View 1 (cartoon, rainbow, N blue to C red):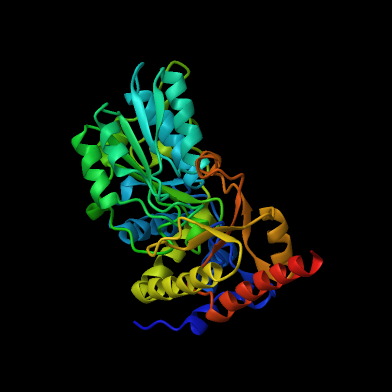
View 2: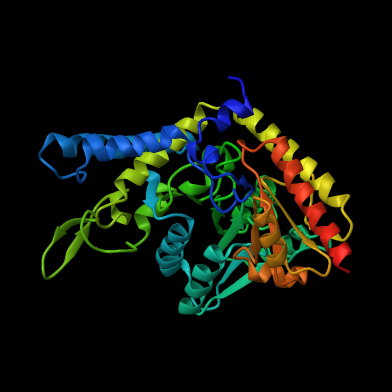
Length: 405
């Protein structure tokens, strides 16, 4: 396989129509034609509900829907496709886990350990699960360098947390958690391990059997797939033991007014009519990614970030946050004396789309001593010319400020 950024870009219809330099990929990526076509084909040719229909349309829809599940199991190198639970996204997956797993394992006095740059989608569900159980949510602090403090993490493991929740790649900073070192340490301490992979799956291959966590959650729209769909993967023995999260059709085996028995995996956690077209689109996104040269895509993205990092560091009055050489996908920055939203509005007027705010990481912003930041984030379809346009627009903003002064 070979990688041609221009050829890749041509597969994304929106990029030729928006007229915007799109550097907000950590919030959501655009969708290739292969994904759009798969979803359109379902609605035009196979539209029906899945699993219980006696007609051919339902059979075709079911094959496409379950085929997407098998595709995602292959994409993740999951041991079994029944461990792949379709969710509404990372937030939905974390709520499922915090509610069901939390109910099963947390007792008064227990602790849940979570990294200090976690997204609200991880923090709030586990915080609420801890409150319900009389347990405690304990953050892993940052070091002076701005990454996670490994010594503090190892010390906190001595308290034997029941669950350790780790972010694979921080959405606000692009910083990477050293999962290869930390997951074995957490397991040795007797904890169940949960990984938020939302920012990772679109940038690098994920091998769950090699990673060695107990649960892994991500969203489709961060990996060139549709919105409103995601995956929670979990070890089958744990998923089997966990109580259902939502109740209704599909997740049942037998219902009477006196009692209900529940379905097997994966349907036990998929109540109601699923997001059929979105799941098919997510399967198509996984297949599309598997056809790409992932290593070449990653090298291209790293080159874009390196150029942005160098350019930002050469501008006067720019503060970069956690700008490490191994950042993945994103860089966060502020201009001295300027509100991040003002910078974002200027960039938007120049045709540059970035994200400004706390990035659903308010505790992280507090640790950094700021209220928010600007975040530029790249995907493989971005170009060097777009990075130069971004840097030029920031330089123009600074010149405007100096002239106005």
